[in-house]
Every structure is written in structure tokens, then in C-alpha cells.
Length: 251
Ligand code: 1GP
Image (tube, rainbow, N blue to C red):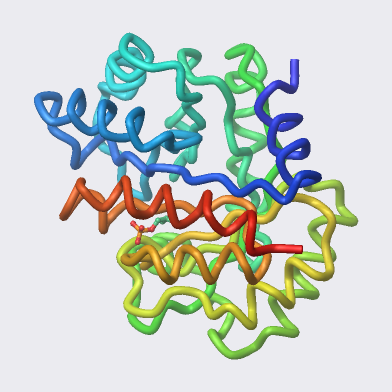
């Protein structure tokens, strides 16, 4: 039942890092999706994350079915709004924006969508979502109407993550926002990773393999990249290799 989550926990035990390719259903063209999936498959990407802050598309189901038709790489929903639920996915990151103080994104939208989410039959993974200032306003910081954690306040990030874990959240997702100018620092990642036991996902503004590698060494368990791959899909291979190679370097 908890296939995706248990897989993540198992990997964490083995210090094995994962690479997730973020697909925004609104910016991917159906014609380029197949080649993107193909590249991800060849690069041994571990997950597809599907979602975005502003998904206007009604074709979420189709995008996921198209991915599923050509690969076994699991598809995990990373919803920007309660409407972004598809029963064709393998799991849903059930995000609560614990870095913000907007009750709608902490619990309100969950209440409204609960029956629908439950009925989907999806594996639901409670996720503490921590948005960190990425140096310039990102869509997520604007849409969420909630202040991000200042980029240099490691203590705020780690206390937020600890609180999330004690509240029962099974994952911590640290996000500088899609297209962030500054990705999250390694020192903040390690502050968080050292203080929680659940897997830590890191994303937002990661554009090069070296940064992905360093984030893993700092304690990230999953690296998510969207924008950089949209601009240059050939990066998938290097990013995936960097994430996977960090395992040997850790101990
Ligand atoms: C955003 O963490 C993701 O929510 C990925 O960000 O698009 O900048 O890679 P990028």
C-alpha cells in the first residue's frame, strides 16, 4: 500500500539518493513529453513529480497516462492546488505549507479536498512543505500568500522541519521555488537533515549537477529539478548521475 513511501525510507537507510524530474503539465508539450520520458528512463531517474503552482490544464490525467504508457518510473503528484489529483499517479505528496501562516494551505484546502483525495485511492504521503526564500519572488511565494523562510535562517528551517516531523509528517520538502535565483544552501539542508529522520526532498533553482551532488552530500534524499530540464533536457543524464554518485561519497 505504501509502496512509494516505503521505497524512499528503504533508500534512505542505504544512503541511496534519488533524482526526480519535475513536469509541469502546463509547460510540457505533448510532443516533447515522450522524448523527455525517454531521456529520464535512460538516465535512470527515480521519479517523475507532476504538478505546478499554476496548473491550468485539464489534461493532468492525460499527461500522467502518457508517461505511464512508456515507463515504469513512478509518478508522484506534487500538487499546487487541490484540483491537481489524478488517480493514474502512484502517490500524492499531501503538502501542508508549514513554513507559512496561511491556514488555507496548512489545513483549509485539505479539508475541502479530503473526500476527493480519499476516493482517488492514491497513496497519500503527508509532507511538510517548507518554502525558503530563493532570492527573488517565485510563483509559490506569491500564490501562497505566505512569507518564505529567510535563506540564511537555518534555525527557523530546522525547527519548522522538527515540528512537522513531530506532527506526523512523513517527508520534508524544502523548496526555494521553481526557477529560484538562489537554490537552498547546503548549510540549511544539513541543519534540517541532521534533525529529522524522515526523508528530505530538496528543490528549487537547481541547475547544475555539482549543486545536486553537494545537496545530496549535505543530506538531501531526493533532488527535484524542473526548470533547468525544461530549458535543456540533456541535463537529465548529468543530474541523475551526480545524484546517484553521491552515495559512495557519503558515510
Ligand atoms: C519547484 O522544487 C521545484 O517547486 C523545482 O524547481 O523548477 O527551479 O527546478 P525548479
